[in-house]
Length: 249
Image 1 (cartoon, rainbow, N blue to C red):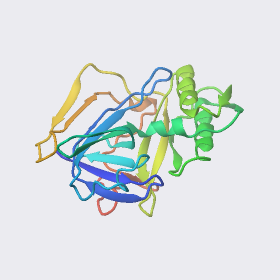
Image 2 (cartoon, helix red, strand yellow; image 1 turned 90 degrees about the vertical axis):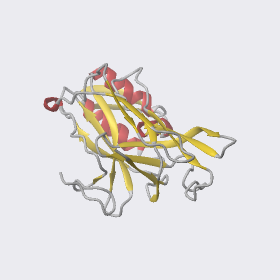
Image 3 (tube, rainbow, N blue to C red; image 1 turned 60 degrees about the vertical axis):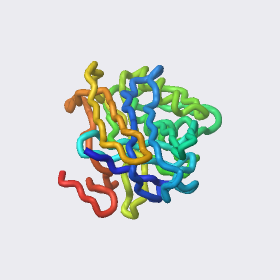
Image 4 (cartoon, rainbow, N blue to C red; image 1 turned 30 degrees about the horizontal axis):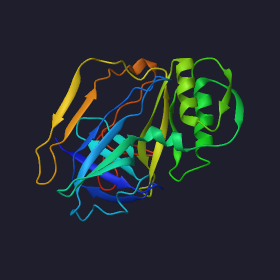
């Protein structure tokens, strides 16, 4: 089963679809101490799509797959070049964007955990180009008063998730013009860790190493506000694949 790999610029405008395998990881964000998912792909320097515009740091990469959940990440350092002309591009899951969205001072907010998350996302949109929109937000639990450090929105999100035992993530969607946006989701419970692993090996192509996809299997808990997992990009006002592709669900 193959993947579809789409590249968008820092503002979410579509740039290219490339032929490569992407190694990527999914992480359950459960608060302080949780890491950001990682990924990488290889592309030949001779590939006409291996341009500075497409591989610019800060660009976004969306990976669709027939079976695995859709994945969205951002291009960042490090980058490796081999003597045989292969470029290894490093990716971080899109939640890393919150690390780069920094404000000043502190803000006192009284709200439910989901309301606090909404306020963080609102503040995150005052900097940067790609738009982050509220996705599936769990609105349960009692209101609490928190002092949010606007200069560290990623760790503040992790702290509130840890404090309230909630989980969160970013998923990709497109607007009516095909522009990528990030949907910020907040769950009461997203899934549970399993020791099992799902692996996919793809047929190698000349100049490109064999791709290996591996992810921990999480059992969705639908009764606790877990989002339905979709394989393709979603539209802001409906489900559907990006461009000419349409979802059947």
